[in-house]
Amino acid sequence: MGAAAALLLVAMAVAAVAGASAQLFDEYYDGTCPDVHRIVRRVLKRAHQDDPRIFASLTRLHFHDCFVQGCDASILLDNSTSIVSEKFAAPNNNSARGYPVVDAIKAALEEACPGVVSCADILAIAAKISVELSGGPRWRVPLGRRDGTTANLTGAEDKLPSPRDNLTTLRQKFADVGLDVTDLVALSGAHTFGRVQCQFVTDRLYNFSGTGRPDPTLDAGYRALLAKSCPRRGGNSSALNDLDPTTPDTFDKNYFANIEEKKPPRGLSRVEILRLIEEE
Image 1 (cartoon, rainbow, N blue to C red):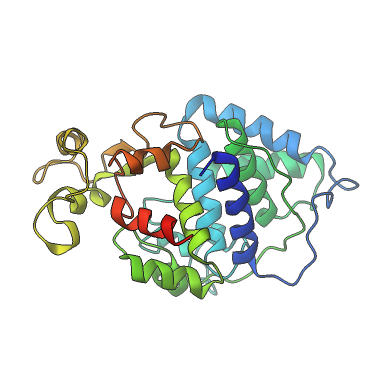
Image 2 (cartoon, rainbow, N blue to C red):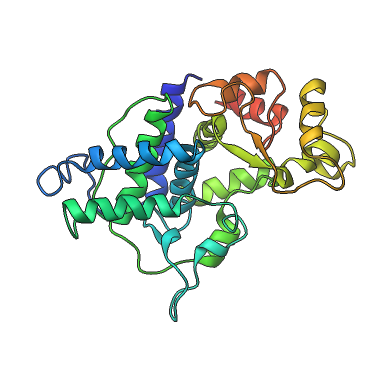
């Protein structure tokens, strides 16, 4: 699957996750904040100078927002007397990142066009531009989302896909939000850039599917490389590894190439992802 095809499917999948009845269209801010994309791009380029991971992190942040009660920016809400923040759900706590950059984008947009651009649209635009700036394809993102006023900690705990979920569980979680196997394969391809903590790699290295043994589909040399970074005992569980060992900061089709070469560091095994692709 090429990068452009994967991104088209990703865009369609995110739109399906949103599931909102509001009419979205890409010219939504043409009359009220015509420089919105230029402003977001400027902030992201500046942020990337200090943090090469930020493009992948913002793409993931948008996904984690959309998978829980739609693309409503609820992931940005902090704890209050009436809100229990999604930020502290297990899939997000000490993992989801990029919040200060979102704040910087919001500040820049408030200066240019106060009270116009929603935080939900900021996340969508930031993810889109992050992919473009990482070498991925360009597309026009529908806009006009409204910000949510409630968070769903339980939904973030239970609905977000986990790197430890098996194939059956993942298929069900995607089906629960109106996504199918094609969406699952395409969105898996977004792991072509960014990093993964050792705590999400060690099961594959030492106890795959509860067997007490490594994933037999992993390339032996790549498994040894990961084991150096993530030893069985005494290592740093938060140590980072490239999701894509070939082009870790580029959005391309190499996630799928790495599957063929038996080098997926996290998520579905080679057998599982190829089974899904064959189904399609």
